[in-house]
Image (cartoon, rainbow, N blue to C red):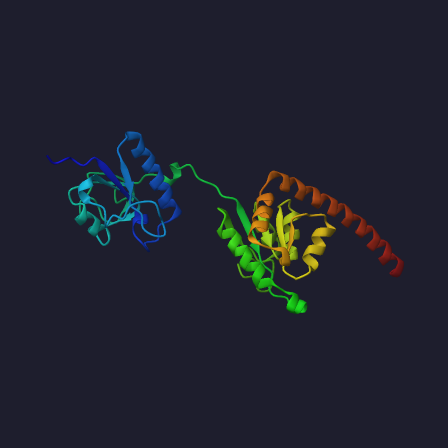
Length: 299
């Protein structure tokens, strides 16, 4: 006796390699996946690299499924959609949150469809209904190689460690350049540089001003001194009493992981603010000394 299939296959542009699936596509998928889960209907998710954990729609048996649910994005009568429809011809097609490229009166392969937009109606994008996940935002500020330090400079090793560190953690990485003449990320002015740094949860940097401009705004900084034996970065961190500085000769992945975890803690944020307050009091005294000295010469 033939068993009637009772599974659904959830698909979208994340089901095809190289088709540019977005964060919004994944969030819309999760929304619809939660809706299906409430029905109790077993569901597989078709995924293609770089996404993992699902099934390959080209390999699974079409006979196992009663419905295809295609979620989010543009949808029209062309490849690869036509390949899916041919392979799962017996399945009911549900379209969820789609931008239809053709009017339904011209081409309607759906048993049920809720459009995002079409020639006749529109609805909110499904990703708006998702529980939006968050990740710590970490600014990466790398210093250029400084010839004045000669063989003592180990910038390449420091930057490779930073890259490895952030690959291992679920953080949103933001490249920041503090230079103004040739800024690698398009920042054009001091307010732009300061404002971007101020949006970070933490900063990882080999640049002195990367650490200073973060701490000045209460943003914890993992400062890596890229000069063997230490130079201006470690000297400045000692001067302002900021503890999270690593000399390149002592830098390794476990040490940096521990330091970054600290920088993302509430305790580090409090200490960064305290550090800045002390530094500003010292600068106020320096102002007084400078004015006294200047007046003694220029009268």
